[in-house]
Structures are given as structure tokens and as C-alpha cells.
Image 1 (tube, rainbow over the protein chains, first blue to last red):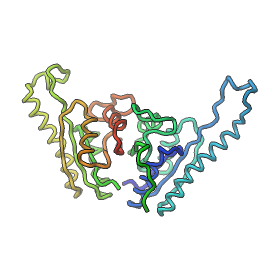
Image 2 (spheres, rainbow over the protein chains, first blue to last red):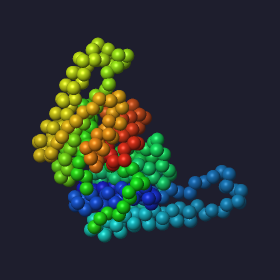
Image 3 (cartoon, rainbow over the protein chains, first blue to last red):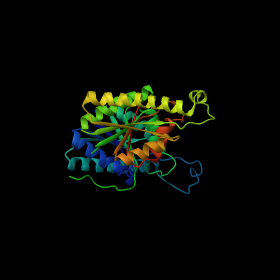
Image 4 (tube, each protein chain N blue to C red):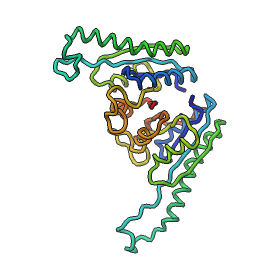
Length: 157
Length: 145
């Protein structure tokens, strides 16, 4: 029933638990993995724009963010490969990661999403992370939510 | 990897759909399931009509009857699928606490539940009880829509 697992990652250690679980699940049940990382584009600031204080090249910024995202999905692909699990990767550039997650699940016909309850933007014990929250609200496929942090470990091979 | 699924139900149609999916999943991955239902505490002052009209004893009887009816849905689905199944219920005003507690007690490694239950989309995004389980559970939670 879970034959294609979407695993969004922001490269934070909190994503690791979902990644390891997805690979272990895929290996045991002959499923495939789709790894996604969403790079967030350069945010223009009216305070910095024209002040000359910071001459940050937005294009270079976006590119380096995408490179970073590429590294995050590559890490998943490598781990999957080590466990003989088929893995596709996608990198997207977007201000709203949850939309990319929901869309990628559709594009690749994924039947489940494995993700961390919180991402890079911080762990607040009182709430489920905002991106996870939005994915839960907008997707129609099941979502398996992992609490990040404790007892992270690589899959046993 | 997931060997024992906790499947909480409040008897709502969306819970019943989640039950079917959970049992199907358990079958495919060779896991067992524990069905679980939480009965609300009896209160003398309440907005729930059943409680207003009932005595404590009568309410307890009705609630138990509900619980066994809801849990029978899980038992039925499990036996049809050939999945090993156990059931339990508890009385609590905070279903999410009871759910997390029983998951620990029974040694479940996954909680599988619907995105919202009987109370509807009470929380802004997902139903409040599922939300609270997601927030407080250290065990992974599978949310069905």
C-alpha cells in the first residue's frame, strides 16, 4: 500500500529520523523513495535594497541554496542506494515548501509522505512545525510524522 | 519495522476509513493492531445531551456499549484481513493523553489515526485530538485523510 514514499528533507538532523525510517520501510516492503528538498529563494528586503550596505547577489544566493538542497537529496539517495532501495530526487526553489511537497507527491504518484514533525525553523514543543502542519492540511495522502531528535540512528544493514 | 499499530477510533466515519487503511497496512507489513477507544468522563454539568439526561450508571453503560461497537469494527476488519488484533478502552477527558499512554503501555511502535474525528475540523488545520497526539507523542504517528 505504501509503494512510493515521499521524503522531504531540509537537511536538518530532525529530518534524519524520517529518512532512516523511510529507507528501512522501503527495504522491507520493496517500496521506492522520492527525496525532495526545497530551497528557499533570496528574500528582498526594502531596508537593504539600495542602501548599498549588502551587495548580495540574489541569483548567486538562489543557486547556492539549490546546491545545498541538491546535497540534502543526494544524501538520501546515497543512503537508499546503500540499502538497495530505488530513489528519485527532486530539488525545488520556492517560498512555500509545503506546496512543493504536496505537488511533488502528486507528480510522482507517491502514496505516503514520511516527514519530521519539525524542521530547521525550530522545535517548539507546543506545536507541530508549521510546514508539517500545512502539508497535513493540504495533502490527501497519508502522512507519517516523526518526532525528531532522540535516538537518531542510521538504518541497520 | 512497524510491528504493532495502535488504532484509536471515535466511531466516526473518517475513523472507520482510517481503520480500514490501518488494517490493510498491518496486513502488508506483518504487524498486529490494537484498537482503542476513549470514553469521556461523566460530568453532572455538561453540554452533552446524553450526559444531561443520564445518570452516571446509565451513561457508563451506554458508553461501554458504544466502545464495544466501535472496537468491533476494528476486530471485524482485522479478522477479515487475518491480522492479529487486540482492543482496549479507557475513560478520560483527554483522549490524546489516553492514546499516548496506552501506546506506551502496549508497546506500540506506530499510532495510526484519522486527521480529524467526530468533533470535525475543530482545530484550524487538523482535528484537535490528532493534533495533540502529534504534538505530544514520541511514537511516530500516521495520519490518514
